[in-house]
Image 1 (cartoon, rainbow over the protein chains, first blue to last red):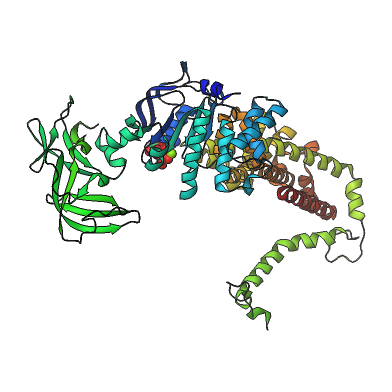
Image 2: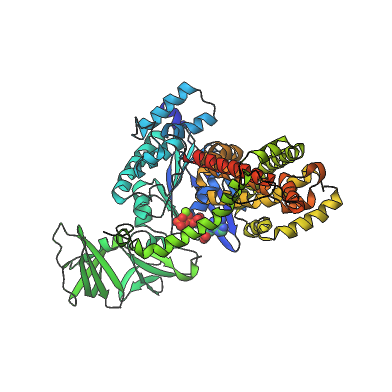
Length: 367
Length: 269
Ligand SMILES: Nc1ncnc2c1ncn2[C@@H]1O[C@H](COP(=O)(O)OP(=O)(O)OP(=O)(O)O)[C@@H](O)[C@H]1O
Ligand SMILES: [Mg+2]
């Protein structure tokens, strides 16, 4: 099997109006989502937001109350899970402890009646791919956490599924290993080219790995976009708040203009709904004591230093603005930034480039 | 120097401080084991009556047991019923435990409680109820009837053993198997069952012994050619004290012990 034929077998997923209710609770609320063929899409959201429910609906392990799930142009909503040809990796790995590593990986091939010699060949190739060559005879309880993770992965892709689903596959690993596995997983995805839906509640992981991120909250999709877009242009307050560190400053509206204090921030964005607006400030976009910056391209704030915290590669400055809002400013400790070590109680001036300004709707029009 | 001044382990109180525990444990063990240890020597007595300790020794009562058509027939009945009960109860109990464990239905807990009531209700009540119910269906004095009654008694044990096993099992394994292409039935037999098999064997053994040892229900619903070994033993005790039952009891203790050791050996593998 050459690589291009694997890529060809990847399938797009098209989800329409997917709804799943548990009693009064909407675990999924009319979800519409298009996942492109070969894409790495991450479902990101807080605990209980419905990520697992959506993933299990795609895998066929729960039956939604309404909606449609299509793989390619084939409706799958009534197809039982064992016929969906979807590889899955669980947080607990769920390896079969009564089988060896090789037997675990061979299991889906056995079910497909692949003959013995081809089976051995494909298991060995899968072991190579996840860098476990030679460990086939090991027992599951003789493996480390990272190795188990790789076996679970190999077992999920060895039968060349058209879709790969992973539910927080790295959350049981320590930080270092997790970061290495993120890169390996990404590599593997590039090699296999299989459509991948990945669940995490770790935003950094999502930003690192994904082609696109679907931010989900209370069973509703809040935004589906590339990581840069999600980070730089959040389309609502939830996404702005959930992704990255941020401070929200409510904006005052006068006519068609939005103000913070006396400073004009922007004109009111074009939306049909009547709503309140907030300014989103990322700590690393703020400059401390910018000196004589250009008023037209820069927005200024005055405040009092509350605390300054050294955090290793970066330093954090907590500043209370004159209107009472607390903002944090992050800057690299490698470059000498004037003011970042300012003493508590001293006055500082902060600034942000107008092109870095993010304005999001808040309050009443938000569903 | 003294043994009771040394700690039981490096983080524990001394043996002396634990003396009460050792004594208590010894008393409990003695109380549990004494009846068995009385019966065994009694079975080798040469006397007409049950006596302890025996004055003269012989295998007389073992000859009596193995030579008697009545006892042999009752033994075969008991073995048949115990085997059938074991198979039916193990299969039904495992299915019920699995279904209730997996379903997550809001009534699952209550159905579980309902199914294990035979363990809670006094057996004498079950016996009386079964006797009247079986009367309506013509099931009294039949092997089928006894198997049904014993299955009701044994199934709760099976369910408890299997549920305990499932609790320490990651059901996601079955899901993974299904996502890899196995039907649910295949996933159960290839993935789940091999991992709970020791519990299934234990449950089977327990249900076999439940039936084989059972006397109260048997007294009510079995008779004539379907009378069980335990029923005959009970009658033998009531009418005249026949030392044969000491011989039979000894054999039963031996068989139970061997079966238990066997399952433990299987479990260790
Ligand atoms: N079988 C169920 N019965 C009732 N409620 C359920 C069931 N499964 C999930 N829920 C509810 O549905 C909501 C979404 O659950 P889900 O497991 O999808 O969350 P999640 O985003 O995966 O969270 P986490 O990050 O904690 O894994 C939660 O409020 C959860 O309590
Ligand atoms: Mg989850």
